[in-house]
Length: 137
Image: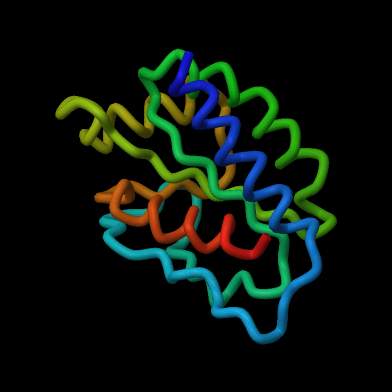
């Protein structure tokens, strides 16, 4: 239950930050780092995405709570991608078998995920990115 709340809080924090006015004097979000490969897209950088609303979804394919959030994230992607929303999945493996790219690719197909997904040591990215999103308040 806690993990589901944390995932939904991550999604909500990103959405709130995106909807809020930008403070011209604030620092920018940290760049994507520690990513070994990108699935469903060429490599992305936050500098490429400046000016767009970016929803970063930290998830893993065997987490039931993460799986429960996928229908909403996929629906937002489909509904708003042509209006500037960019959904970026950050696959955050909890177990060694979740690090296998073949397993992640099969999960993307099984769940119908078509937006970009980063794979690597993205857990290290989560804390500074969330700190940046939440510090804009």
